[in-house]
Length: 393
Ligand SMILES: [Zn+2]
Image (cartoon, rainbow, N blue to C red; front, top):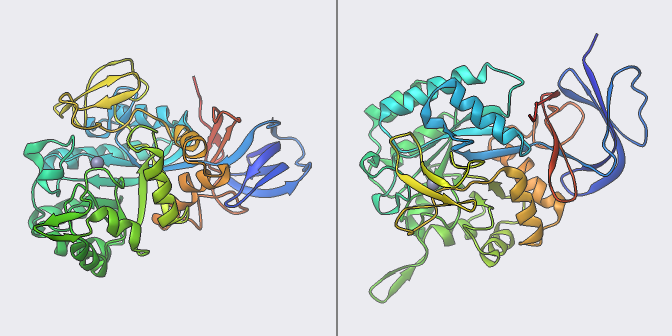
C-alpha cells in the first residue's frame, strides 16, 4: 500500500502565481496529484491547510551551520543539528558548505556529509556540498581563516574532487594563479564554478565565463566593485555579475548584509530567474548572543548580538543567523518582490542552478514532495521532505 498524504484547502504557490483552494496528494514521496478544490484520496492522512501557503520547499545553496554546529565540525551529529534546525525554517534541501581550511579538515567534513546523507527523515536533505574556499584572493578572505587561503594546485584539488561525487558548487577567485585549470576541471565534472572572495576585473570574469564560470557567490559581499587604476576604471565582479546573463547569482537576504537598493538592483539586472536567495547561516543561527567561531571550532571568532554576526573588529558581517523563511519575508517586505517570486528565488532558481529542477524546486506532479506550509508572516507550520513531515520539536 502506497504511503499517502493529502494537503487540502491550501494556497498553492507556483513559479508565477498563487492558486487558492487547491489540494495536493503525495504518494511515496512524490507529488501524485494537484487539483483545484477537493480531492478524493480515500483513507489517508489529511492536512487542512486553510489560511496557509503550500510552497515548494526551500533549497539553500549556501549554508555553513546553525543551532551551535557547523559543517566543518565534521561529525554526523553536528550535520544533523544543522539540517534539523534549518528544516524548521522551511529548508528541504541544502548544500553543506565548507569553509577555507586544510585539505585534511575539508576531507573529514566531506566524509561526515556522506554519513549524514544516509539519515533520512531527520531534517533538510543534503543535496550535495558547496566548497567555499580555500582558493580565494587573500584580500577578500572575509571571515575565513587567513592561514588557510591559498592558490589552487592540481595535486591538491584533484584529491578533493576525487574524494566525493557530492560536490555541486565551488566558490573560488578566478584571478588567482591556477584558477583557470580548476574552473575547467569543475566544468568537466559538472560542478558549478562560482566566483567569490575575489578582486577579479570584468575582463578576468569574462574570460572565466568562457572557461565555464557559471555563478557568483553572495553578490556584493567579499568581491570587487568598480576598479580604479590611475585615471582608468573597469568593472569588478559586482558589475560583471549584474551585466552578464551567463552568470547566475545569490544574495544573502537577511535584511542586514544588503540594503534594499542593492537587492532591488540585483533583481532588476538579473531578474528573479537568475537570482537565488541564500541564508549563508553560521553556527550562531538559533543561538543566544555570544561568541561563535565561523567554520571549524578553530575558526575565526564572530560576535553574535541581536541576531547579527559580526567580525570582532566590526569590519564586516560574519555570515548570517537566519533561516530561509526569513529570506522570503525580506524579499517581499523590504525589496517589494511578489511572494511567489521570492519563493521561486528560494526554490526553483537554486534547483535550476544545480541542474535538478526536473525533480525539485517547484510543485508539480512527478516531482519530489519537498513542501513547506507557512502563514502570511512566513512562519513555518510544517516542513515535508520527500513526503515525510520533519519533527519540529
Ligand atoms: Zn563567503
